[in-house]
Length: 317
Image (cartoon, rainbow, N blue to C red; front, top):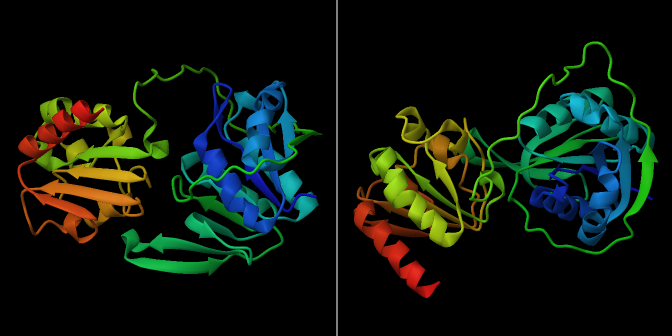
């Protein structure tokens, strides 16, 4: 029996860590059904990892056209299963996940709670709003409430399950569906993906230029095996590409360790990283707002502090 559905995220045939987080969070409802949307054979490759993570059932919503359309196949698969089973749905928060959630909620006439950090069995969820100024508890109504879970908000805890594969018919998208006409894989990065990284090193305006990212931020990130992030101020000043922006108008991260170098701590930035498990801030301004949420703060010159830390970590590594 399936008590909750999760939308499986994967890349190049490998399960994303966010899916393990979804399964862990969704387990409060009971047996987890993992919905795989993709080309024929995708579920077979992912089944062992999904079973190990805790998926009791793997719903294989597969078709040759599944990867050719934006969002629609995922919405069709989830909405169809949710309507039939009348169970909650959990997807990863983000551009794609939030779009899917809204459409599924409309299809099954149920409420949607976005970017939550905790889900409970009574269908109540915890989230942070207004740039993190308030922590709220909300309940979504309907037979199949939909939750989008913030990546990194839950520590994945694998719990082996049957992982029984069950085929699901995927309807062909209608004439209004958006079809992908060409696709070029992004250049593979040497560092972890920002929203999935366990450690993030971010630079702000205080890094003083692209050279600061290259000479100070990136070396510290590399010695830690971390992803690199940037504040909006740094991105707006062309210090670093926009796809690495952390904050309310960028990406939301919740790593085990977040290191902020030269970041003042504007509310927009804090909204995207303040749920990190441990926050370390380096700033020469002792009144910087980032120190209000930092677990450890260093008042000093980042161009001296960060290289010293990098050198010491390299020695111990």
